[in-house]
Image (cartoon, rainbow, N blue to C red; front, top):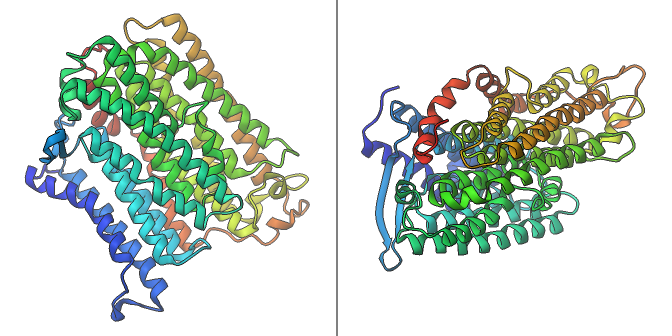
Length: 528
């Protein structure tokens, strides 16, 4: 990998952020006659694949041109004045923390567009669907690329509108209520977060996230830091989602179309935890230190609560929905991310960032698989799929069953797969929290977190046993009688997630070597 000139990197990053927005506008225009293919619907779906593919290609080039010898430094920076009266600037850049999230967003959006080209969810015109998908990608990429607090807030809010309509117009049963619940929860949290961002920026004299990280809270009073940390933390915790602010998530995932669930779990949840690392920890360190034990307590409560909820949904006779079960599992997995952040250590924060990426890959794959299973059978109800003695998916559709089992064991943190390292590092961070934090308290959090890993293994193995195992000659769940195996377009959409899950599990040093210098620059006073 050869580092590119800074000017080229700037152009690449701006193109990555702007191209989806331009593509969304173009999707609403009539297709040129020569590009319509079999009709305008196919043309706009092909347009979605082309634009998201181009964004992914640009992101890969940006990654290859990134100077990997200094990942702790901000690169590809663009910094020009936008609203001088308020001190708001168009400031973009990327480092070892945000670059993997940019790649993850571009990859998942491209795979969703590719999947939708063949399996478009039922609903209104594909033209609006593709435009909303691209607008969602633009907002998410911008969230990870901007370095100004006000721009961060605008990008953070930008994703609400497209996700609302994707759920409300292309979702399943209960989509209207789920979409409103999603918007209301996240919007109310964002109002509180905006107040915190204003308190931080106005008192620090800058909205620039790089400058805030450099001064590391210098000049901010203790009370100001407490108020800013609490307000910003609440807004980010809603999106994370942190227990007990999570209740919008299961309804949104259950009602959303397959690609909506993939993007919601794969990238939108990461916006909240990214904000903790990028803004809260370096910007208001005293406030973060004060609230760290409470954040850790809520995190482990989410780990245990999410696991117990999944166990309740997985048991026979509970009429549990597989999409809802995976949604509750996200509450538990994101609890490990929040626990790692709460340790305020390099080890814990690196574990949180690693778990972020692993969750995006693995849970994105699981939602793809459950969505495909629902498309084939007309239901994601676990009791219906399992029948009396097991769904026997291994025998009826072995590749689909094998992929579902792979996703389950990756999600439970099997060593050698991506999910293992993030959880391990988060727990190690809790074993040795930052100076000034109560080690006995964090040891208790560690024990509950470790218990959560056991509960996670329990409910995922129950799901695999009930859906995948059984004798197809003896067990006859009607819904699975004629289920087809993995199709070509599904293989194309899911293979990258499987490969990256294995690579990230076997070669964690590649990501950790990219992230750790950036984490050290954000937490300069931490020794481990």
